[in-house]
View 1: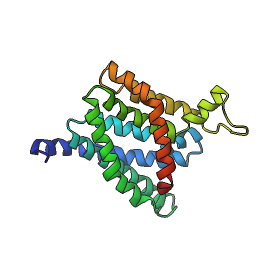
View 2: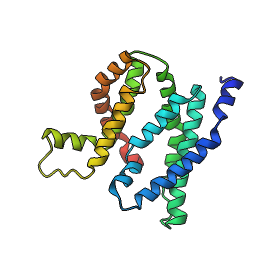
View 3: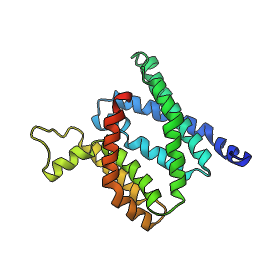
View 4: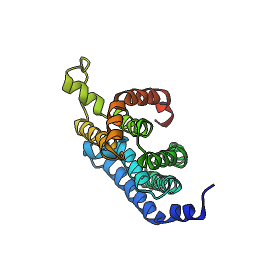
Length: 213
């Protein structure tokens, strides 16, 4: 049961997160239509959004505030993205809108709450949470094709289409495991766990990716 102080902390600054979400959603959709592949990639692949939710969670004063602020940001971003597409670009409404709103209230909120918990603790368990977030960035983005090209392990005929996004994914993943965790031992654990958590994220995308595509 959350206390009155927790509830006040959760609602503080909410208009700012609402406005930030709207601006992010409009910017993401405008980037989609800009003709610049790297700009469209930033709004399409998970790196920027995972980092945003992680920062919201890490900076929140309480677990409740982290969940509420992240849910409001992500829901307003989603609404702005699809409203811009429907009203400005006349693309019509997308069937994924309610799915993303549900994810905003559940998965996104839980992720931000988990980040807030992990940010104030040390050891392998909080590190695993940071590594999973980074693994989602790497598995859902374009780092792995870039890695295969750099290491010479790409399959015959595999074309590297999103090199800039691959670099962005790598930078965001390193921020998640080497900058945001609380202390050096946790950062070391997070780095050690990054490969297995990326493998787990790949399996999750294989299992559930079709539900939101």
